[in-house]
Image: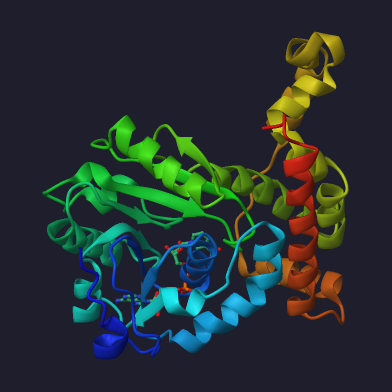
Length: 335
Ligand SMILES: NC(=O)c1ccc[n+]([C@@H]2O[C@H](COP(=O)([O-])OP(=O)(O)OC[C@H]3O[C@@H](n4cnc5c(N)ncnc54)[C@H](O)[C@@H]3O)[C@@H](O)[C@H]2O)c1
């Protein structure tokens, strides 16, 4: 065991006094994503130690309040969260003590591969081999993280969430060459236990899976705006009121199968495959030149108008919560 039980008093900064039993989760980095993980874990009954040199318990408390409606709408329970949460300062002695008895470590520090791989090696030296070291990284490959780990590199995985973490269920699980099926499945099981929807990425590639799919769409969207085919608002409307709705229900490929009627995917590809091939061949590249960046920034400003980003985020999250509730009820048989 022994979560030190006095992190809150000795090294922590939240005054809640820490825990006293084993089984806690350690979060490293408490920015946008780390705080999101904290809320998700607290809502599922975990005790959490969050290590960040710049984030205090007050910020976590604000995030809990901001996320409360969404989290509770999705079945989470935040009652008494304060007694299960502790905050320590960054990657120092407070963190070292907090590792004792940890069942899971999730790193969400700055997107700096050097920092992340040094941290993974430091954690690998200190944690029992069965404790998974997961990174939220969007941009670093699992093999880079594991390269300097000598004890149990296979337990170093990517567990890539989506913002806002307490709302969007997807977590991409990506192992490195040493990661066994058992570790990857344990990672998926852990995320599932938090109400997340893990997807295992079978081979590491830059950007994992969903961000590559997003990048494919962004590339074409940017190019269409640059060519004057559509405004930024037109692109958003075309996706949000069109295929985006179907994608949220069944994904892009099962969507094609269902669009094929009784002939399914084979029929879709037979009659719509040739034109789709032409469209794919016509897709353009997009370079984020200063001109294109201005075009996109101005286009979004025009689309947003007088509305505040907070207002739009709150409306987005409220809609997503309803959609997720309906996905659970009506969409039980869907992916
Ligand atoms: N923002 C997103 O949409 C998103 C989505 C999925 C994954 N990610 C990934 O999650 C990670 C975090 O991203 P973010 O957007 O939360 O970044 P962020 O900049 O909001 O947060 C990073 C946090 O790390 C802290 N930090 C810096 N040095 C530290 C140290 N030595 N020890 C502990 N904490 C330290 C910072 O104080 C900061 O609070 C990145 O790897 C990113 O790729 C981000």
